[in-house]
Image (tube, rainbow, N blue to C red):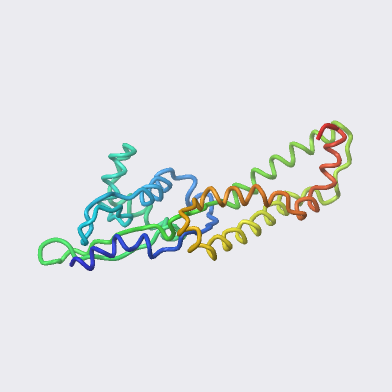
Length: 226
């Protein structure tokens, strides 16, 4: 039994350091409780492990997740509704069943323990990003028309091109971080902060100039100080 319980602690070291996940809007962003569950599994609960040391356990069962949601976020949810959200989070690849332990009298009850698929999760929504980019580009188009500036012929495709370029670069950056996971872990660097910094630096990539050089030229006409 001690070995089975140890799995709940070992899980955190066994999973990847980093995962980049693109999610449909209605599967994650429209349900705050799902984000809270993913965050809760990051924070974990501290208890004594089978080896006698006090550690964070990041694999929790439904009862524990329910208790922690109520304790930390004042969220009261039935087990049935909670299982529904856990199923969705598994479906989109953010959490998984770490193990199933035998509990109760004579070990008759099978209890599932859930955990994250990676210690650091970088979540985006292509649907939301495209919607935001489209709105922003349309607003600038209105300004350009007022100023009588001629936009590139394929301007309407710019939101799609921007999203495609960013997603491509972010996956490359994420893969690079995963490939250097051992170094990052050894030096106790923060993956999240590193990822955000690399995104900022990557913004000067020539590909972006290729996409927006003509638009930037128009903007310089309106704001010469740029």
